[in-house]
Image (cartoon, rainbow, N blue to C red; front, side, top):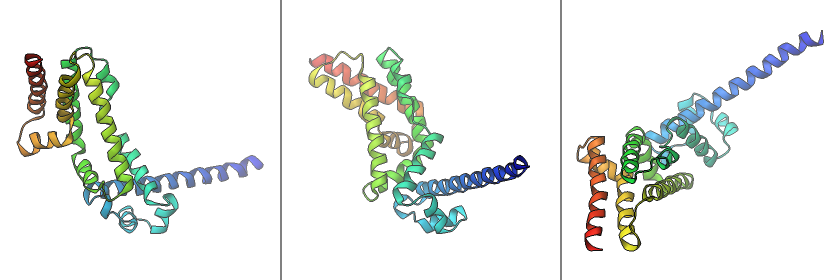
Length: 208
């Protein structure tokens, strides 16, 4: 008899947990949508609640503050739109082939996440949680530059110039300028930036 009573109780608990998870996901996706459109600085708890179809109190029950909301948004968005795997780049021995692969993949990533990157970049100085996310992206690009410099033979100031060219090629703003403003395709932009790095290398070799 006790087992017969326990089964409905267990089912109710599981169903309640599932509904809570669904509500949390709906709130998270509403916040992601608003962050990517109007931007984090203009996103309010009331706006998130309205977009998710819940009450403000429900939002606060799942996310007690702005930092918790943004952390959930970042995790959810990054899971759906992961940046290129730096370990995969590390596995390419030839520096020029590695650079070409990296630029192709990072430019695809920028095309996929353009709206969110623009919104968060614009609000980084106004929202502390966004500032942390932008800093994390900066750290990722710094590590990417380091990986793309492996196997290059320059030293001293010449090496700094090559690293600067690679860092410039990896930047979101560079992709935006070449693709959105100048109308180049992804491959054209990657080719141009690869040539920039090669030109830096040649000019350095000629003068060193």
